[in-house]
Image (cartoon, rainbow, N blue to C red):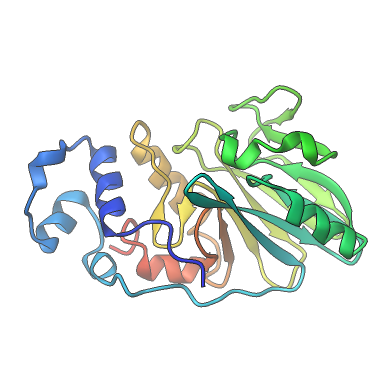
Length: 241
């Protein structure tokens, strides 16, 4: 079982940084006071035993590779013959082996953002790569907000979820038996990506572009386990208010 990306202290630190609260100002505060001051859901914050139910979906594959002391996720969505990759991870070797083993043609690579754990292995993917025009990368084709893509029978809609990074993008995939959204570092199971300089923007984007989707939509984050929209509404302290 893949552990959650963030623990209690990580969540508190991200909320404090986003709200501009100095490190020492809440030292020793009880959990009720922390939740109130940091605008976090008390029940979700207190339930540190929660873990999302395992997610398995035909046509969706997750690849978790080591990056320094942590891990990072990348994904492939595919039909019977054609595929799209989301981020490169630290080492795309497992993704490339997966494609070869199933005789899948990789049509395109979509980047959620430009940070090196997500985009650092671009040179090994050997396919067309795209990223938001708000976060350009040399050799990668930029696209405007709301761009749509296709890979075989799959339709992919780019949704801007900035905050963690200027051009942070989540990708909504249609064509599998359930909706899937790949969120990069915008949203994790039970937490969010760090956004100290654009905290309210990050929260608003997540609410509008991700949590507005049906509850059974599968969320594929850049770190930690997969989850669903319904689970995050109940168990993510940043939104389960």
